[in-house]
Length: 351
Image (cartoon, rainbow, N blue to C red; front, side, top):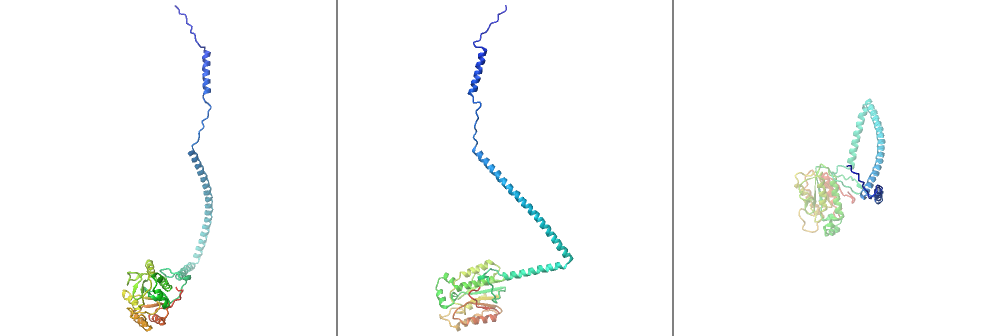
């Protein structure tokens, strides 16, 4: 038996369902922010980095311009140098051709070169000399003194008695009672030290020297160098001698015989002796019994001291001023004649 088809009834129509669906889609479309734009705030560190990069680019651009300008200048200098080089080469070729044509030109050029070298050496000797130590007086003056500054061994004897403090007896006695610092600053003593510096500055580099200071006794200026010759080429030894001399304060009497007695302490005798003093000695080997010394006694002390000088040694005396000693200049001048040395009484602005 054929079953009859059963009709199914819907509560909603198809059109209603479609309308509801379309309405739902429309509602969702309205609810959603489908056209909203998200605003992104850039990071501050990234902005700063961008600024730095822009600055680097600007700086690189400026440097590129500078380099390009420098390159242009270098190119111009290169062109100029090439031109000068070609000119020099041409001149050399011309000179070479002229020399080949006349061989005597080469000899003339050699003679000119030798003459220029000799003139240069002479100018250096005049201007600088063979000094081992620089010394400049007022105005950098040079003096003709007749002093023989050569020799292998040079002995400088410096009078360090109280009379070297002043030109008069009264002022010397007054300064003798002052403290050592004031004694060292005495005008006459400063003059003496400048003279010693000048003598040291004139020594040949190949020579040797020694500086002794004497009053009642005689001792080397540099400690622990008794009887030892110092090298004049040793600048440190020279400066030490000058410094040690500046630390000395004049005092006591004058024993010239003790000064010349130091010659026996050397294995090899000096070639030249430079004696810096201001008069005849006031004592012999020992202090006098009386305070006052007469002119005759001083002359006797001087003659005794001369017996200590070996034959063949030149004695050069630099006599500083001192009142009350009229025989000193004549006796020291005679000593210079006898020993083939020199005698000078320097002006106050020397050296």
